[in-house]
Length: 480
Image (cartoon, rainbow, N blue to C red; front, side, top):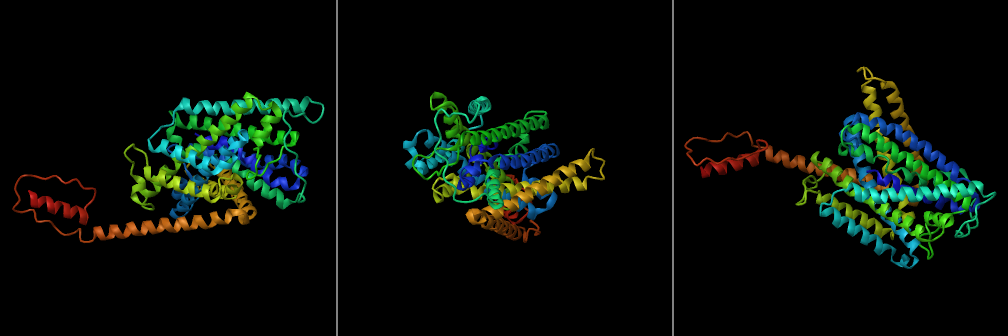
């Protein structure tokens, strides 16, 4: 759980460096301050979701929190934002994983899109077969990712600190491109907006509190602290070493592409067996992070369908007790995004953070409303809790505004269109089911003639008394 949070360290810093690349070497001097601002926002989210977990021990996802505290419309907005976020988490996770793979094996670069679609198909088949999360199977690549990347960052920092000057890379990274733009506040805001994708998986723990063993809240708090702590150290270490070793993001569409992590591992440790182990762990964690959406998206669709805003097949488990309709819908949506954007991570990034930060903002605003109503109930520390979630709502709302402004023309406009259209579609589904229910209930008040009936007796289980139930009972009476 929370693998999408850890995996985002693979593409969040690279997304920020992609924007700063236009300023050449001057941009590298600003990756540190940009990262520190992101870490401050990450800390605010940590304390905010710490409270959400305690208040909603049976899962406190944005949809539930927003619906219960801000109303149905806010809940639908959160649901639409989360659906877009889950779709993009799959597409970005897979495309970034393939980017790591083609960095290690450049001969595979021309097949980037096909590799993305192949991995997507494999994850889909695995989930349709009802494969459950195995603690050991998921833990090995995660521990390997954290340990190998942590060693690279620690050893690289040691060399940078005690080399008596700029550290000498084992494998020199490509030269930093010449500056084509000056460093401006607007460019730094764009870099911040791209780097915010590193935080898109923070909510995952609050979505799955019920999956923890007792005491659930304590274990969920520990997991959240571990994920945020590790993620913060990874982001800070990558930013520091990128500046120390002169590592800049490259264009993923060009031959010879090397991801930032590939350049970093090569510069610190060379391209021996350890390099391939580290890049392999990056690929595995990114694929597993994409897989988390195959758990969360169908579960969200199940909740929305139970409320009548999605077709009822979304709420019905398939033969292997998985929500097959939600899985297939997620696959088609993520596959469409990968095809439309060629499996290139940089093209998907502008769409990604909008849905995540919109759901963050609604969740924190919902929690602030929750504490506001509880301020006279005698709950301990309610004013401090209100202040923390209120700060979280304001901070994520400001970040969302920055992301929309900075990324609108780069592709965020598409998310701005998709989310309202999704809400309209959800509303249309609800109106359809309301009309069906009205027609079914019409005439259900008519009495049944139970005279002159003898055995056999036919039992008819019904959920409620309506036209369908009446017709079923009338047919049973004809048989008895």
